Image 1 (cartoon, one colour):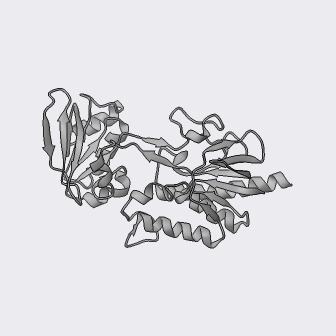
Image 2 (cartoon, helix red, strand yellow):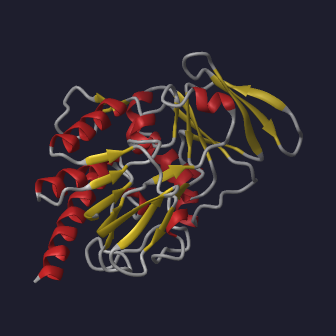
Image 3 (cartoon, helix red, strand yellow):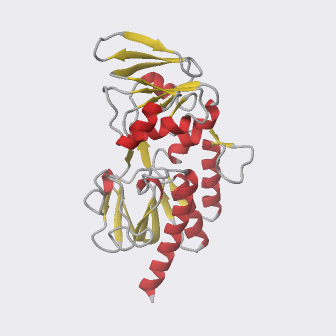
Length: 306
């Protein structure tokens, strides 16, 4: 049986697309991924999403999104798409050996923050370790924190965090920033920002919350401890698009390119959320794009039938 729409991925974009397509009687099938809910599943308090004046836990918000999609009879599978073929309609998607066909596809597989890959960082995610200053900076008012990275993202995150933190250390493995000149100048001249050059983080300290970092200077090999209450990763994001390589157009960083509205280079295949957005990366913008993709898919399907 060919589905009218298959949604690949979840998070705010995917669940919103599911709600809208289900309410349009398109009977969507969602292959939400084994790590359902996206990056918000790693976020503790969400205080910047309208409608929640007291804030809400990220996983709780995503569970609410999911239940709302199910309420309108979205069929949800907690699996990963392992292969696709968009060369002709109906489009083909595989979950291991199981094949699905669809008249339209909405991709909302998101992006994953790049992490250092150390055990203590994983253990303290959401408890002082974050990859989103816009999401979590508010919780570090009057605290000393560290930003890891040296590009534009790191400079932007550090400058944003000075609105809340009493001091921001920028820890960079090289001896100069890779950021654009204007961003580097702003960061270097800010009185709340201190650069820690030629340095890498070897361990995040703390049992339940971050209490400091164990750092090593790459030039002198000296190991020391830096007392901070938060660590923000700003070493980039990677869009979750590997399975789509060669099937739709991607930019040089792997993000899905969309032309008119949310349609990709393949008519009938749409994209929404962080998988195509490397600028805003917010839950509310992802949800908005999910709504757009659902409406675009509905209208496109109508055009094919008329």
